[in-house]
Length: 346
Figure (cartoon, rainbow, N blue to C red):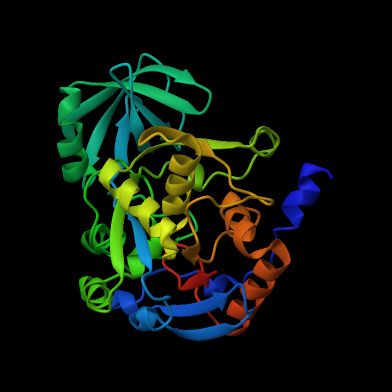
């Protein structure tokens, strides 16, 4: 089957008004679709009542990465303005994308409220779609510069968010975010408030943390080379040895391990497959796939033709996934990063 035909198998028509432009408030008031694979049963509720559906002794695994304010408004030497997206560091230089052409050898000044800040980048080189920039300040100060001048990198399909920048920094971040350099949030985690986490603990459910820095690839269209090679974009992950031992012990006792989000799922399966506690992963989970560590999944409703849809289809089956999405649309669930979610149980 041709790649374009494979992609079309994961396509669906989503009414634009179902793309959430702001999160549910409070977080745990987001709607929840519950699907049990073994019985085929569906239920509809809100995240506040998640504990009602989790199997006894469930272990929830969260991605505790932190989203950076990675977008910077800059002014070019020519006077024109551009927006760059910080993607990390390589060999002492900043790796970034830009929505405007930046010529090697020129400079770009960081803007704050439309005015130059005195902080600049020199464009050293361009490689493919990526720019490599040298700042006029110590590169170790970059996290401080991003906090001061950066903007929250909301996904491109959120075009009319009513949130202020201050609100975005809070709402597009999980309540347990600890550290990291993510340019996108692990969005299934956005439904969890501190109160909900406390209630789940009182109900006897355990929570464990791993970390995967979510990269630009989470928004990139799935390319044929990804599908044919079986490898996605590379992201950095880490899990503590103690936590992995506890998860293996849970598996031994047949306690369900529920990944909170596709990034947590990719982390768990990478560790299970490679045995490495940290490093880089390009794991591509697509049908057919046998999950080694994860039993269930909490996830949002994903963009058509995406690798994320394929990951979820690996758990429930492609045809069933499309039916679940169709049901969610009929019931006016909200889709994508700020949207509602789904609990998939064994």
